[in-house]
Length: 234
Image (cartoon, rainbow, N blue to C red; front, side, top):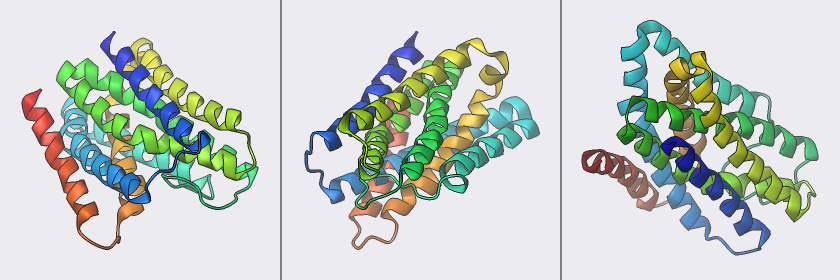
């Protein structure tokens, strides 16, 4: 199954981001911000140009409601129920409760990543690959974020890597369950449209918004252009 293969690659990126933290390799803050800006442009384009229109075309008003449900679900788990979360490396101490809350929120999010990949492949292989590309771009900073939160809360490197591995496992589970649960298979596209829109607009853009210079904006618009180029080539 192609979707499962792509989910495995995405899951590996979660662990790679964690390994970058636990091995104490230095990451340039500017490089990470530019990667996040690129991912934001790509994700917003996939959500607004493909996932959401396809979901509304399929289910009309109900599709739009499930898009909203996906958007609200991520906000609830990542921000309403979690006091502190952002993409990128944690630079100050946090409580164990914060790290656990962030992990729970990200598990819902990464499960949605798997649902998005599977739902994209249900429509067409081309859309599946585009959705995977959007998700893959933010998997590295996602793994980096959760592992650094675990370390900042006093956890061990093994726990930090384990947390990132759980995120990858949730992505794989999202693909497998979408394939086997009827309602999730039907409305997964709409839910993933809302999740993808939220991650791009509410999680990623604030990480570079307001930064000095045009490089971040260039990366963001480059992500949008990259999406349309990939769409034309695929």
